[in-house]
Length: 340
Ligand code: PEP
Ligand code: MN
Image (cartoon, rainbow, N blue to C red; front, side):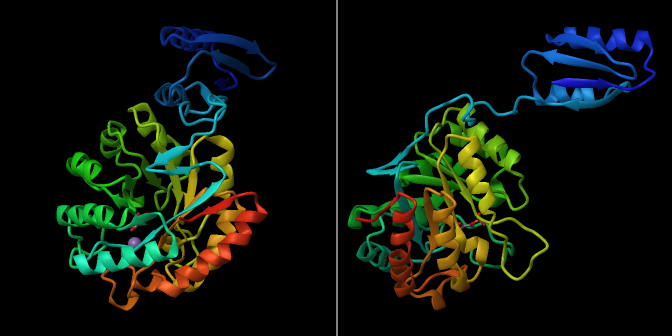
């Protein structure tokens, strides 16, 4: 960290600042310029330490040199993390597709969805049992009943199952029922939830918050890693911008940057980014080209009857076409589209 001291700072104030740096266990090295003094601070700097020095009256600027995350950083871990979900590996040269309806709605709906996915070769089914809805009057999900149906799907079809967990209290039971857990965009900075998910043995998909910066996104992953869960997958799902022609703006720059800065797998959810099924194929192909490790995409056996996110849910034949269209793009970037 570098601290730039304001011009005309008195000797006493400067000495006080230097003493303060030493008091917090850091090592100050002073450079006296013609107008300003600059202090190089050596040692491990925390976010709150940085904020503390920014608040001091004689300090003009604090520049952080080292990134605030360590466990997620590629600088600290030269390996690339490969997350195992059953017999599927995420983060290697395979391109994985996690597909399925937005919500678990009923036994017949989820079984039909599972059959559709199985027929098309998809190995992991997404479907939310707990639903974060903007309106309290909308379908709220089946809750634990939905988890039980997902377990049934798994037993009956052999598909791996993925679902969102919204509440700290539901973490242990959700971890028992499904293969892969998801933190939704609205909960990316729910730190208690992240801490709890840090303790479970199941891998976690961490979705980007609606207005989260990439730094905040990585810091949320850092929580999961720090609290003990090493199997974290980033999911870019679009951010809120001035553009309102689609639901959110898919930020593919995030995919490229996360792959560069971190060692964790990155997948893309084109469905919640677009909000419109027509845009899913081009966004998905772009995701492959940007270096994503997989997709999280909504598809429903009967989208017109979907209880949530109907307009962005692919029809079965559209999912089939999407997969066919992804294959050559995967091959072009040296990936293999993983279907069974
Ligand atoms: C979802 O995947 O069903 C969902 C609610 O997405 P997000 O958290 O990205 O809004
Ligand atoms: Mn949805």
